[in-house]
Image 1 (cartoon, rainbow, N blue to C red):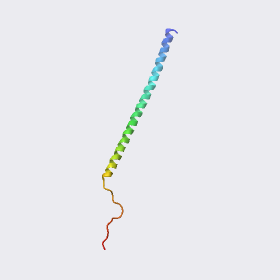
Image 2: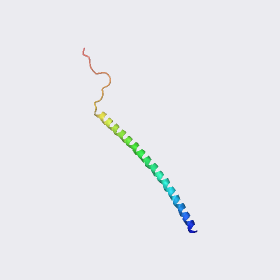
Image 3: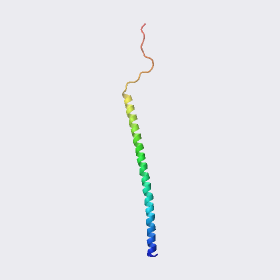
Image 4: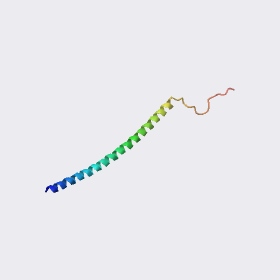
Length: 76
């Protein structure tokens, strides 16, 4: 193979490597965006669970609510 052929083959390899790097860069960007979206969703879930825990513990401290008829007895 001549030096021109070798140079052309090297240039082709460089272009192929550049294309692969661009594809990998795009894939990494998409993965980073997915990570950010999942992180945001996880934070929302954590906040909801914390709110549920706070509401549940607050209800546990409250006095029970009376239901039904009053238990007053009439004197005859």
